[in-house]
Image (cartoon, rainbow, N blue to C red; front, side):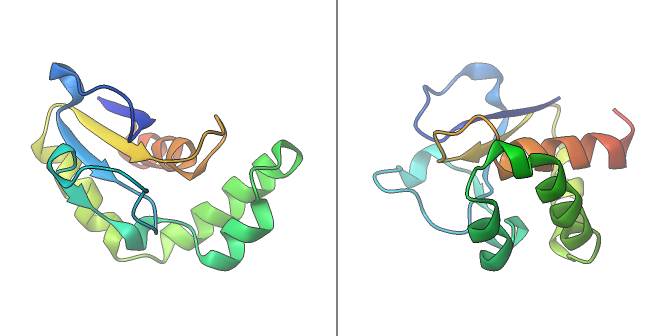
Length: 114
């Protein structure tokens, strides 16, 4: 199971391995609440700034981000972590419900056929 949640949300027993997928470390986030930080899995700065959490750009953002992920060698590491753990939680800091972690989960679910 791949979950997504804000890094500031309460820890839960079923979170499994908690993976921060933001490029920047979230202000005030505690290191002991995060198991792995895969900052290189986040969208490029250029793409992130272009998107700027504009819902009108959501579908185009996902398309461009998925293209970046297809070329990103860190995806293999993430897929390996998912395959070794029953539950994985992708952590993000954004307040916006449409964000790169949500897009990343969609990408991984398609890739893994789940």
